[in-house]
Image (cartoon, rainbow, N blue to C red):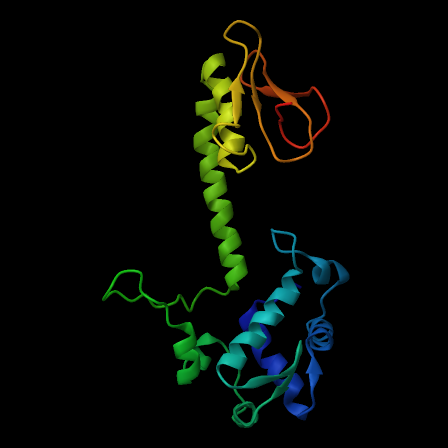
Length: 233
């Protein structure tokens, strides 16, 4: 089956803690994975960043949201238990618990309130979005990255050799890899030499790389010496 979204995890997690016992987050995650019938591959599936398992992330946010609504509380690091309010909710026998359900409780509403960036203007969170905050951030990052790549690639492919050499210097500098402007490096070579070319400074271990601008629209990277990034010796 598909990995359930974090809102679908809320009620099963609350029921799991309904025994009034302390539960570790790891134990709860494994028990929930079993109850949802997740395969080993689904349990290991990572967020796009590769930093955390998707299911673990969603269980974590289901816990966080229910803590903010007062259904759960932390007993110690990565451990939780149900509260009296959480027990009262279970007695109601709800069909599901989602952010709309949690919004009945003022503590959760206050937690979700989006602070306005413009005075007098407030923005309500999108309650139809079933992605966790990390998933939303990573999706937005990927959209920006793809948009930037789409717009940047044609410009780089169409630039003159001398201009490309300057790109070699400027891009790593903007990424924080070239030190100060003074030490950033220099464009090397010129039009008609087959390539390129720039050498940049770096705080990483010594080494050099030259970026060769080949014929056509592709650029090949030619290592000159080993090292991280491009370096002025």
